[in-house]
Length: 105
Image (cartoon, rainbow, N blue to C red; front, side, top):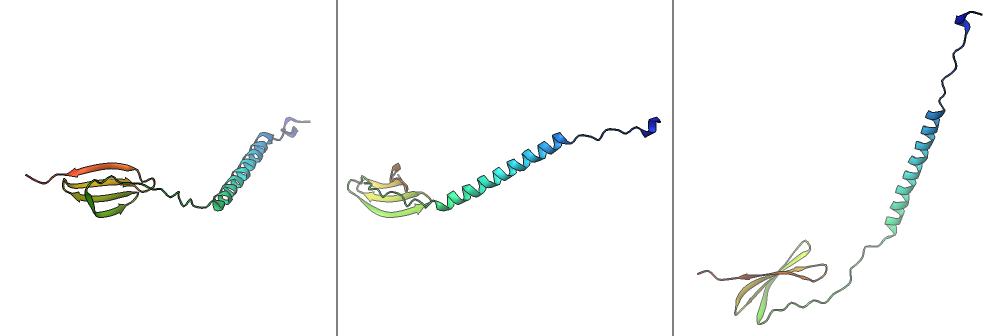
C-alpha cells in the first residue's frame, strides 16, 4: 500500500451538532416565553383606579379656572389676598405645590 491510498479520518462535528441543538432549544423556549407573556398580558384589565376624595384648602378664595395637563391639574384661585396657583396630581389628588401671585408695584 502506498501513502496516497491512506484515508484521512473524517472530521467530527459532534460539538457543532450539540451547539446547534442547544441553541435551537433556547430559541424555542424564548419563543414560548414571548407567547406566554403576550397571553398573560391580554388577560390583564386596565385598572380603573381607586376613587379618592381630596380637599383643597382655599380659605376665602374662589376657583377661577382649572386646567388639566398630562397628570397634573392647575387650579387658579383668587381672593382677598390675591391670586394663587395650585398644582395637584391627577392620580392621587396630592397637592404638589402652591404658587402665590403677587400684584405688581
